[in-house]
Image 1 (cartoon, rainbow, N blue to C red):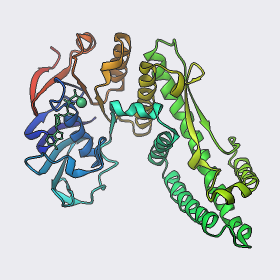
Image 2 (image 1 turned 180 degrees about the vertical axis):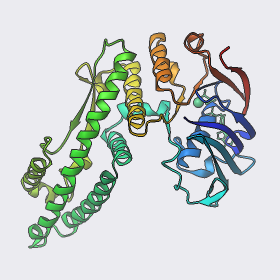
Image 3 (image 1 turned 90 degrees about the horizontal axis):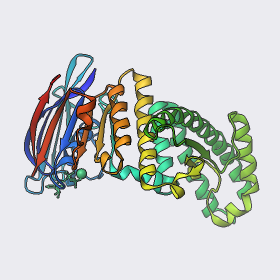
Image 4 (image 1 turned 180 degrees about the horizontal axis):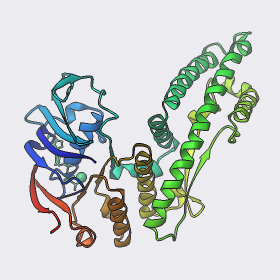
Length: 377
Ligand code: ATP
Ligand code: MG
């Protein structure tokens, strides 16, 4: 069992001084707009990742008046307690301690996993390909350290190659110079594409299961890799096709001064009933598809580690109809990890019907109140 047992916030966003204890399974965070629901979830994410899902700037997290913040969390993992303490003063480095020992900022990153779904995650369906590539790269690196290495080396080679294409394009020997970079790019690029195909297959399996239950099997989700390279499941063939494509594009690339083939330009197509969801889906369908990708992440994580990450769902219920809400709650119940759900509208009895064991936390003006502890009520 892995869960966050307690939290202490000082000067974090609109919380001056707040201590809370959580339910090991389900915590409902209820309050009107602008009271501090997302801030509370953000602090939990921050404890795990030492980065917010809303901003990259630590100073935005410090309360406007207090000008510092302190976040302390007690995680329970494998029956042991782990205390994470984060403290920050304006314009200073974040201080991190794990079990009262000062640590590097990212040292505990893999140990206390938290996955968040917030309204901004809709962008993964709505926005251009860059955000989906980022998703694949993050997930790929999490699943497979080799992917991260390939990606780093690929990006380095790509920069070198682009530099040559731009700066030395009029040099007589340019084609000779480019050749070794072509090989390097094709080698690393085809390996990345291959890893992405494996990842997408695994993600698709889990995302489809989730999507099926959310829609009562009335809609079908498919994930397709869309590439500038003619790829298949054999990395060697993909690499040869990559090389051929580069040589065909040689003149155009020299004119443009940039590399026009490779995984840095590819996309993950999320399709609903065979149509590109980015262009043809309703708002609710897009949100369901985005949530399916996130919950597929949760499922993959669970398969790998035999334990669910902590799940934060910020404002997830505002756009779902009752049946989708119900199916989501059932999924969370089966996943059996700790979950925090924030809502401004309440859940109108949905939770009570499904589960008797949960905690309600209400939030008002930057203060959180432990409302009910319903252990088997
Ligand atoms: P909604 O239902 O609209 O999403 P919420 O309860 O999730 O509302 P939060 O996003 O948690 O609201 O924000 C609550 C308040 O915190 C906002 O009014 C915001 O102005 C305030 N706030 C944000 N950052 C800081 C900060 N650094 N210091 C003080 N207050 C802050
Ligand atoms: Mg909010």
